[in-house]
Image (cartoon, rainbow, N blue to C red):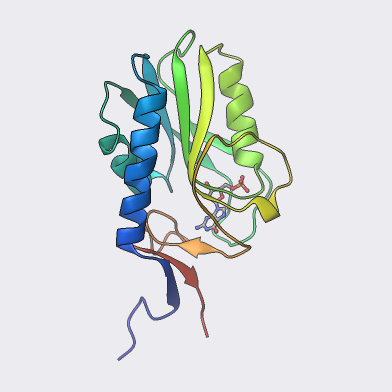
Length: 177
Ligand code: 5GP
């Protein structure tokens, strides 16, 4: 009997993801030791990675979210980036880490980074679970990368295809055949 998961090929298991996120958390906690850190997640795709990452960071920090939409229910970027929900508090003088699920063309981060830089944080860095450097249209400095991918459309572990598959506990590639 076929199930809703049959069109997905696994490329990163739950254990592989967990191990790498633990490493990233330790590295971040070391780098930001003693600093007033605000971790800003970009919804929706980041919700699972962000929850695991901040719990792997053994330090005092705050979390906040922005909601950004760039794909219109498709696997191709529309090129348009809309801010659906902005930060509720000022970030001037604070150390800010933007957390993203995946960097593809770079357009989303380019826009969000410039917006936040205008608010004059003490520092602004970027962490992403996945990076697809081969797809980049705009250069953005990505400081922490979980895994680098080739040109595949990833689903699971928070990432969707038309709103579906976010709840898969692993990362997969959509393969309808
Ligand atoms: P960018 O602006 O860098 O092109 O795209 C960033 C956003 O596009 C990500 O936050 C994510 O929501 C979406 N995206 C880019 N590549 C993928 C992918 O392979 N799978 C999924 N599910 N979303 C993607």
